Amino acid sequence: MKISGITVYEVKPRWIFVKITTDEGIEGWGEMISGTKTETVVAGAKEMGEYLLGRDPFEIERLWQEMYKSFFRGGPINGTIVSGMEMALWDIKGKAFGVPVYEFLGGKARDRIKVYSWIGGDRPDDVAKAALERRAMGFDAVKMNATEELHYIDSFAKIQAVVDRVASIREACGNDFGIAVDFHGRVHKPMAKVLAHELEPYKLMFMEEVVLPENEEGFREVANQVSTPLATGERLVSRWQYKNLFREGAIDIIQPDVALVGGILETKKIVAMAEAFDMAAAPHAPYGPIALAATLQVDVCSPNVFIQEQSLGIHYNKGFDLLDFVKNKDIFQYKDGYVDVPTKPGLGLEIDEDLVKEVSAEGLHWTNPKWRNYDGTMAEW
Image 1 (tube, rainbow, N blue to C red):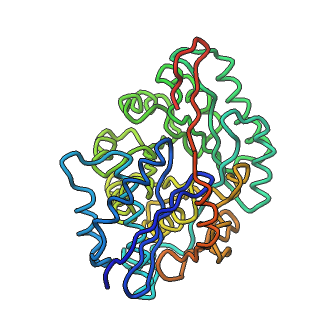
Image 2: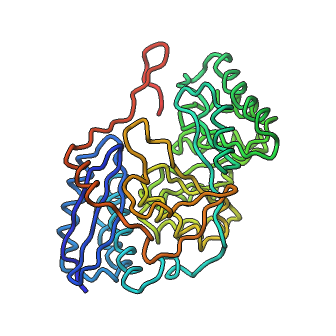
Image 3: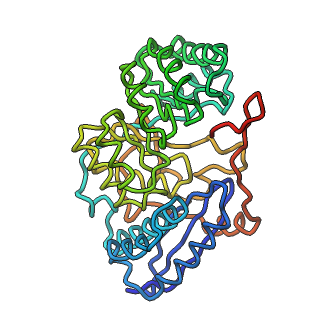
């Protein structure tokens, strides 16, 4: 079997899909992250795709090494391109052998996968109502953004607003309901310590990205003040970037992104490394259906994954949701806070390519927001 074609699609609201075809008619799908450099990623994917033509799609590790290794290696753009290609290769291999991808990664370590739902926006207001709605849908855990932009030293009123929102969820949903709060790297260390301390009484499931990952020394300072588990990792692009986190020991939960770190096998390697340091994993997956399906393949065979992010329903305000592009819409069935282990070959998805083509023809112009502090300085995002 040889790779015979690569097609890249820009898909609203903010996804990049890649389809790899073979000379035996088997095709695989992968997903890349858009962010603020969509056209750069698309161009890079097409360039890398030309290199893969004629190659054996089963030699995933060999192709990964060749795609990843260059004089200037790493970075989010190359990372997401390699990730999308690698997912598609696994999808082909699973379909060719008639088994789900996790069977190549050690087989099942669990019977179901716990999931949480995202609520609120960058400036969430009625989060208690949203949490109750998610509970009615079968979720028993949610995650929310902590706060709007914060300066290095900022108003305590903004801190109190966060506390009030979290308190409203705890009061509405009870003590057994999981609440995760994402600082999203937009909080600097001085205010992160204040905010983490004030949230401590609410027994959070975890606090995410309390500081930006490049300020990793700040994790230790926050960890020394609170008992709440700390999580990070969605912006890290390889297992090599995770090494310092493991050595430092301040983080309790890692959040690798299968669409950024290099794909399925690389995510599995990172999660296995974390297990050796007695750390949990909650993989990052707020994007489309392919990335989520790929992440679930890792979750199935990784005992230290304790919960999985998913984005069902959060993209409708942008025109489309992740199930719109999937023909087998029963693939993600959430019940009692869990999703079933996927059992179909490959990633288990049947992509509606006609809709993908239709949406892709309109183009994609996704950009992250640009925030400013009260004095006009750029805020973190």
